[in-house]
Amino acid sequence: VLRQLANHGQTQKYEHQRIGLNSRLDTLQAALLRVKLRHLPAAQAARQALGTRYDVGLGKVPGLQIPTRDPRSSHVFQQYTLRIEEDTQRDALQQHLRQHGIPSAIHYPRPVHQQPAYAYLGYRAGQFPVAEQLCRQVLSLPLHPGLTAAQVDYVVASIDAFFAV
Image 1 (tube, one colour):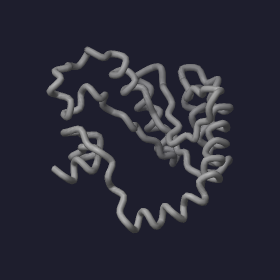
Image 2: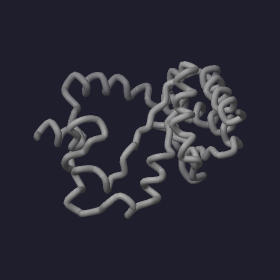
Image 3: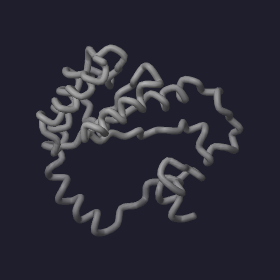
């Protein structure tokens, strides 16, 4: 139970049995983080540049919604998550990317109201249709400070090819 609580209440990835915390930082991690924090501004700038490159490359692809940005703030793109408007295309796009050597992830496959940790609230499938639909539509692309512009361009070209068919 304590391990679950310390890991967001998860028993396995994306399976929340109870409401938990993120309490997984140990001494070694803290020491590494102290050094790594010096590089945070450069890493954030790299993520922002890559996010902008994705925005430019994917912003006009029909059937695809890119992340929105608030002009009053900056976005560091922990994830670059697309919304594929046609539910049935999300899994096909993920398979297409995989076939081209491009990793992707469905970070939120199950809405909060369908997590076991919230079962006591009594919500059922269909009560939050927008959340359920979004869980069928989202797909996150690779984005990390070590990613190159050429790699982003390859991802964009692969997505363009998928939607051009």
